[in-house]
Amino acid sequence: MLNLVVVGSVALDSLETPFGRADDVLGGSAVHFSLAARPFAPVGIVGVVGDDFPRDHVELLRARDIDVSGLSTESGRTFRWSGRYEFDLNTAHTIDTQLNVFADFRPNLPDSYRHARYLFLGNIHPALQLEVLDQVERPTFTALDSMNFWISRRRDDLTAVMRRVDAVLINEGEARQYANTHSLPKAARAILELGPRVVIVKKGEYGSVLFTQDGYFVTPAYPLEDVRDPTGAGDSFAGAFMGYLARHDRVDEATLRRAVVFGGVVASYTCEEFGSRRLVSLTRDEIGERFRAFRRFTHFEDDREGY
Amino acid sequence: MLNLVVVGSVALDSLETPFGRADDVLGGSAVHFSLAARPFAPVGIVGVVGDDFPRDHVELLRARDIDVSGLSTESGRTFRWSGRYEFDLNTAHTIDTQLNVFADFRPNLPDSYRHARYLFLGNIHPALQLEVLDQVERPTFTALDSMNFWISRRRDDLTAVMRRVDAVLINEGEARQYANTHSLPKAARAILELGPRVVIVKKGEYGSVLFTQDGYFVTPAYPLEDVRDPTGAGDSFAGAFMGYLARHDRVDEATLRRAVVFGGVVASYTCEEFGSRRLVSLTRDEIGERFRAFRRFTHFEDDREGY
Image 1: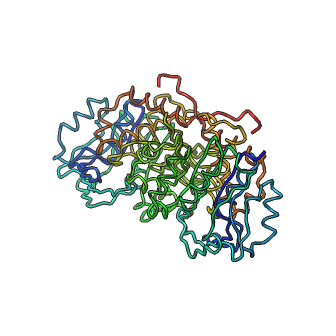
Image 2: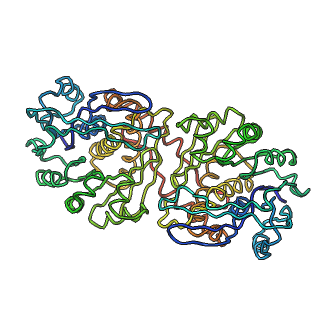
């Protein structure tokens, strides 16, 4: 049964980093999310593509147990983004954004999606995120992502969605921007006070922090020898995080913590190749292997000798 | 018995951050190091001050069981540094550096220091660090810190010291600069290949990574609600790290990992007040409390259900 749904962009990305470039790669938040979630749980996409969207891409998703019945095709061109990363790989510089059919996107959930208990609202206009929330019946756990653009231009709409979801996933810089403070704990608390029970602040190569009403969980990123392209890391973090919760159908503290670690593990794989390429081939065994490695190199024992 | 020695600067710092300012605060690498080390183990300072250095400061150190017999007083003014931090607190902007008596510093270890088994070479000219190494007899564990200035101006000297120490503590940016790569694992490995068995890359508010021949240990920073001034955080990290090793007189992997965590814990306290002010009052109980809290909010359990 479909228990996890994502709404977001489906795109053709052109990417340039100091380590190479790739053109018209399958991308977008809903794609990265669902490819990262599917090793954990069945997932359904809500999104839109143009009539130029390669059928191969749709088949690729379908072949990986991703439900594409919520992916509509409109006449026109698919959403395209091109971006460049400098040497430090932390900041994407947008070269060009062509919204194309995505400009008129109005998400519409197939009936088979409406009972999903886990819902992720990818980075789209907050007003559309609200529309999606209105289309699901009694979800267990809803989460949203957003970006600086909506924080500065549609702050009130975004706040309205935040008030209605269980979790907010947000970049470090965007958390500071939204709450107007340098302190991440203060920024997270400002968002928790709106209603969410979970705030996850993503810090890229520096890991992430899970804030709940009770406290927090801080975890570093999996240290990669070679990062080729960070595009999709945040969305694949979200995909593995939500996928893990949906798989176990639990959102207690211990499960949330492990879900965050799996999020970081899958995001680390994403960065090894351009766009969604690494996610496409990612196996459950590889994920389990890196999870265990991560435990080994973050573990330290209590001090039993006086401290 | 004195088992831990630090050589470095003793300074009067004038500090400005978005949260206030403080003038002529007791500072310098040897001061931050020794104040952070002394809750763990007796420590001796090697350094120099001018005849303007307040007697109160010397008494303050002495009252905290810090051996100041290696602290010489020369006629002239004490080393002064003034710096400013912007809103993000990650980068210090030097406003003024007055080397004064520190310009002619030639470290000379008292006899009582020469059998110390743990030695920390704070950030001074690498040629002087070498001189200090020649003055200790059969140390168990020696470590150095450095900075961008020596990496660009005295690279060969610095490399020569790196070849002779057991551990290198280095900032993220400086590790990248030294090894000419963005990849921290590669940068650390380049340094390990010179001879050290331990490289610690310090990432400020993002924690640190311990690299050894066998692998690594990654740990986030203690998340602070309010950071007032990061001056001395790196040196106090080193002080607690080396103090913990000296206290237990062991340098196995498990002890190194705990030492890194204690380093981060003490550095987090340092950032709560200007300069060395917080370290001066820091108690063993406070350190233990934050160590236990850190364990709580970094711990996650293994997944026993199929992943």
